[in-house]
Structure formats: structure tokens, C-alpha cells
Length: 364
Image 1 (cartoon, rainbow, N blue to C red):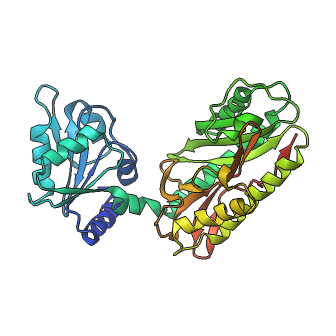
Image 2 (image 1 turned 60 degrees about the horizontal axis):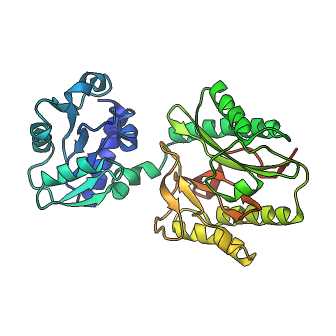
């Protein structure tokens, strides 16, 4: 077995022991990707990676077995469409547990039928989700992961510059987004998302980029991300066609001050909700509290949105190696929105910003 996989399994088992978990059950997706560097094809056929105190095994559809075998030597309990999964699941459970399973840590993103059928095979077992098992380990990035995230951040900086260069009267939001996509592709990254929202459209935090043509006086939210080598970027900056209004300048300054307050608050040992509160308090004191309508940030790793979540309800204690966004915003319906987003990795002395692009408004 690969050395890195062996180390991660050992870390996971140590975490299982601390939390008295008898079994971790993962479906095809980000958790298996983090653990093995690969995940099986996700479809309706039951596919589970079961990890017990000493052994691990896959419940594997025979249809996918040969392809997955190229990536792992973990034991397979295969099943064919003609026979069903029941015997394979029983075999994998016998391999990984001693039959006395009290607590199962379930992949919070697996298919509901996988989870329900697994729990039906474990009568009397209770479940929790992976925030205290794989999820807890994924939150703390290695230096290798940091380097990949930093690389992606620099690519996204260039994509932001390309977007700003493309902004002019008469082009559409979709035209700007297409420039961003082409930039990512030309730098070996896969475009993941693009939110380009001009003036009133920018007041929708998750605006669907449209054919709305840009005009003089527009202020434009540009929120973009891409993937390269399995890790993403995510950055939001603002562009204006001509000098913006005094109201806009005021709001932009408030949002930037909220970013700075959150950066100052983010330190190892701080509870995540206190970082959210630091950003939110700045905006609320300026009189715009009702217009900051989302959490202050989210984790970034294999997925663009993953723990830790920087929200008013999050009790997660921040720690070195955690990577997350700080992205307060103010959204004035019918007028404009302002969001400024940084991705940071938490170091012993505070956050390191991955982007090298200033948060200043770009006026074209």
C-alpha cells in the first residue's frame, strides 16, 4: 500500500479510537479522494469503503472493479448486478469489524440509499457523520496541499486580471466569464465556476452569469475558481467601468475593513464563529448588517466548499494548517453588491493570504 495512504489510515484509526468509532463508511467522492488519491465512479450501484479498527475493504460493483484495482490494493468484495450487493456488504463487514458495531461514522455526502442499507445491516448501531473522522483530518492541510492551493491561487490571480482587462462597455457578463474560462484552460486548470454580476446583478450573491451587457458606471462582482492537480482556487474581486459613486466607494471600504477585521481575528485556538463575528460587526456598526446575508467563509481543499465553515453558528476551533475563505459582502437590492474574498492558510501567528492580488477596486 502507498506510504501516504498508510499514514492517512493510521491517522484515521487514531481519530476513530479517540471518538470510540467502530467503523467509518465512505462513498465515492471527496473523502475517498483525500484518503486514496482516487475515488471510484459514483453511480447508483452500492460502492463503499469500510474502515475498521484494523482492516479496510471495499464493497465494489463488479462492473467497476478492474478500473479501480489499478489504483488500490485494498481488498474488494465484489457484486454483480444479477446477484445484488447483500453478500458483498456482509463479507466486507465481517472483514472490517468483529460484529459488534456501536458507532458508525457515515460519509455525510454519500447517497442516502447507501447509508440506509448499510445501517440496516448493522441493527442497533448508532451513527455520526465524518466531521470527527475524515473531515477533521482533511481540515488540516499538509505543506504539499498548501503548495497546490498556492499554485491555484496564483493562476486565479491571473484570471482576475484577464477578467478586468475584458471589462468594457458593450461586452456581456458571459463574455467576461468566457475570458476567465479560457485563461484557466490555457494555464492547465479546469474552470469550476464563474459569477460575473454587473451592478444590480451583483446584489445577488450567487448570481447566474448572464447576457446582460455592461455599461458605463457599472460595478462588477467577479467571483471565479478553477481546479488544477486536484485542488481549487476561489477569489472575488471588484471592477468598475468609470469612477463609481460615493455610496459604492463607502461600501467597498466597509467590506475591506470587514476582511481586515476577520484576518486579525483568525488565529489558532479561536472559535470559527468569532471570525465571522469580527467581519459581521464591522458591517453591522456601519449600518449595513441586514445586507450581509451569508457566512463569512468556508473551507477550501479537495472541494471548493468544505469544513471549516466560518459562520455565526460554527463551534470549530481553528488550528494551524486549516485553509478557508474570508469573504464578507454587502448586497444592496437593485443597486450593487460588493464582495471581497481571500483564501488563507492558518499559521501559528495568524493567516497567510494565498492570493497576491490586491483587493483594491479596479477602475477601467
